[in-house]
Amino acid sequence: MKLKGVNHIALATGNMDKTIIFWRDLVGLRLIAGLGRPGYRQYFFELGPLNMILFFEWENVEPLEEKDHGFPVKGPFAFDHLALEVENKNDLWVIYDRLDAGGYWVSEIMDHGFILSVYSFDPNNIAIEFSWSNPDIDLRKKPRMLDLNPSLNALQGPNPVKEQRPDITNPTTDGDKKIYPGEGSEFQSRHNKW
Image (cartoon, rainbow, N blue to C red):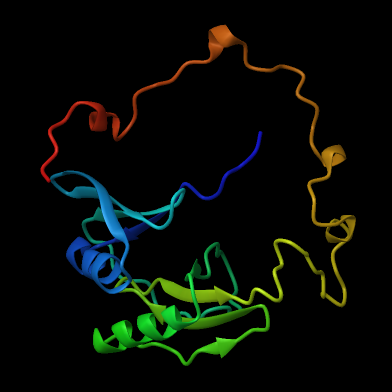
């Protein structure tokens, strides 16, 4: 098995129209698919050739409490912020100007050594970072561990460790490989409104 990237990240909103204006019109992502029925919507935005952001619109969803990017918290928690890659350094100033003109808070552009970043929040208070990667410090080509006290598993290096995987003793047989219809199967048959 080889992963190709993130197919989609699923987020939630209580106001799809504001979400569309932010992600499609200010950020510049194409709205490529939408499903819906009373009380429910599911819209996909194209993030790149393999990646999408999905928003569910559910009644009574409220924006998150504002939480600064990377600021430690206590208690149950899973998601800090969404970081999106821009193609060139000047794109950071383009997104800065768009968000500022749209009335959104936007940070200064920060130099983190391997990336330059600008931070903001979408209308749902989802923390967002827009980053440009420094080609002179490409962590994908040359991974680096700078933690002064790395965990034991981290010390095993950047690549997957086969010995950490359990042996598969009962693989799914071809006769048991079934696929069930799910939300979105109507993409194969329903009329396109565009």
